[in-house]
Structures are given as structure tokens and as C-alpha cells.
Length: 287
Image (cartoon, rainbow, N blue to C red; front, side, top):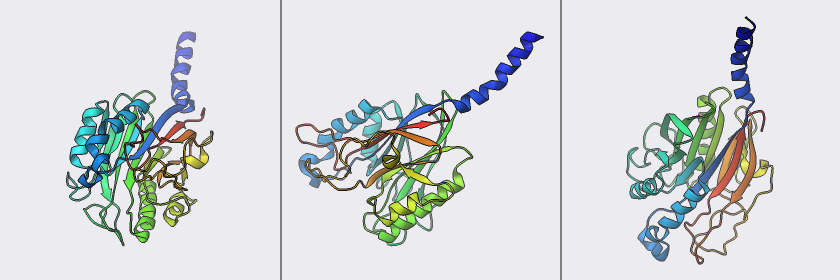
């Protein structure tokens, strides 16, 4: 009888222990620059190996990419076989135009659900929103950690580079979408090229206090940020922008252990016209 009582107490304690545990994740956002002939020596064929090699080396659990054309997506998937990438192209909801694919490590996560929506008043169909110059999208995935069984809601996006109103409304739309789709207690990771600096109105709309508040991983990192602040270079190795436009945001309950802008290059040649941003995260009461 005593043995059965001890066994029952142990089994009842397991869910509590799981909730108390700390699970660490790494997230990377990276605008890879679309393949365009006018880039010349900085064209995709010259950069592909360096870019996918960088991602493979840091091996983030989550990878949000932007400006990815279909053939680039296929090549990235070939170079990074340990990842699954989800998300549709922005022009037709299938494979035409740029993707903002969300990648995750298959050895770490099981895919629960995923999708793509447009940053516009008609999010369920290919469309431009407000004063945007181009269609803009967000790709998302609900992922279950194969070890802890914890679920994460990850979102990857690329805001418009022209429309000021479009960026602000896109930020508000994402906040609403996350609020409506986040499950109770679920950790949220929002990443992307937001085309907005930290003093911009779209940035302010993302981090605005309230229900389902989001926090910039750079500002809440427990260790000082590593690397330059600016993330856009235009392929200029000496470019030092004063603020990032590529960001990673997280929900309440997610601790940020480290945050970095990665500046790897080969003989002065950069893998993209943006630097990738990497954040090490921790979820759980023991963080």
C-alpha cells in the first residue's frame, strides 16, 4: 500500500515538475536578400554557401527568413536538411513572389499547425494593406517541444519598406492576431525585418503595454547586447546604422539570456545586406 501511495504521489508531481523546468531555445531572424542579377558579385550564387553555412553553424531552434524566392527556399532546404520551413509566398499564397518562411529544427519540435496571412484589412487573401508598396505577410507555426511537450507560437514577418501607415497597422494587426491565437500560457516569439528603427511608431505599437504585451529581446537581455546595433548594411562591411530594423520580440514569461548581431564575412564579403540577429531564450519558472 505504501508503495502505491509513493508511486501515485510521484506521478502526480510530474506535471508540476514539467511546469517548473527551464527550456532553452535560440531564435534567429535573417533577411537573406532576394536573388537579383543587379547585385553582381553580391548575388545569391556567390553568397548561398556562406549564408546557409552561418545558419548551420549557429543552428538556431527557430529561424525566421525574409526576401526568399522559391528557388532560394528550395536551395536553403537542401543545404539545411535538419529544418522544416513553413509559409506561403506573398503574391499568390502559393509559390509566387517572396516568402517569409519560418524554419524550425525537426529534432527539437513537432509541427502542430502553421499558416500565412497578409498584413492588410483582408488577411485571408493576397493583398496590399494601407499605403504599402507591396503585399506583406506573416508566417506562423505552433510547435511542440518533443522533450518537454511545451508549445511555442512562432511568427515571422517582413513589414513594408515604404508605407509608414502600413507598418503601424501591421504592428497592430500582429498584436491582435497573437492575442486572438495565443493559447493560455503559451510562449510567443515574433521575429522579422520590421523596416522600423527602435524609435519608430511601428516599433512602439509592437511593444505597447497591455494584454499580450511583447518585449524586445535586445532590451531585456540579461547579458549586454553583442555586436553592432544596426542590422542593415547594403553589403557595406563598414556600414554602422544607429538602430536595428530586424528584431525579435517575445511574450511575458520568456527570459532572454543573450542577444547578438552577427557580422561574419569572408574577405569583406557579407552573406546578405542584413546582419542576422540571434537571441537565446529561456521559458519556465526556473529560468
